[in-house]
Length: 259
Image 1 (cartoon, helix red, strand yellow):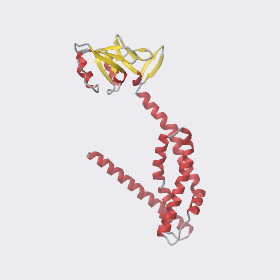
Image 2 (tube, one colour):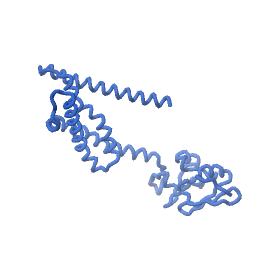
Image 3 (tube, one colour):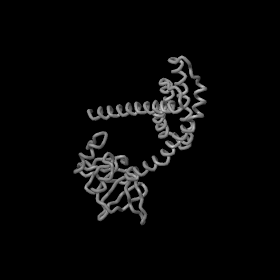
Image 4 (cartoon, one colour):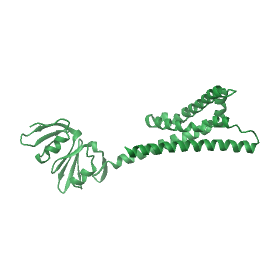
């Protein structure tokens, strides 16, 4: 628990430092511009209009959440929607804050139209690059990660990638092992011990010295009244649970077995 609280605390400090640094950059830029152009620098107005850049932080988070959930077509249109929303929220904030705290009020439509002209292209470019990066790099990285979890087998000199959930059971057939799916069985040059290390241990268990099964592929099971069990898998193959693995098999079932 302590490490979690330290991690959260560090993240909070990072966000605060980032915000503080961003505000200093905004104020510094406006002050330098006022100095070079020889006009008065107004701290409050610089801070108010600097909200435009600070709004990128929440809109980046919103953009990322939407990108993970919606279709590719929507992701292409998303930069336009997010950019307009960003500018609209900014104009609304400037109007509201100036109406409450300033002697003069900045009109919503005036700020909105001026910001569209000045920063609309910047918004589209920034959010467009985020969408482009997400669409072109995030998905392949996920596919690579998924492929690393798959079992590589050879079928007629062609390498196939089997997802663990496709596998019903694995059985020793010396000098190979047979990996059985609903469609067919593949001979694989490995050992039962090695393949067990590659398969997810929350789904696959050893039920015999020569057999591993996928618990999610069990159709039914029946006691032999001698400590062994017959397990019917979803492809109608039957495999035997040896009494030596009986207790291990029981522990993975939701309801205890009875003889």
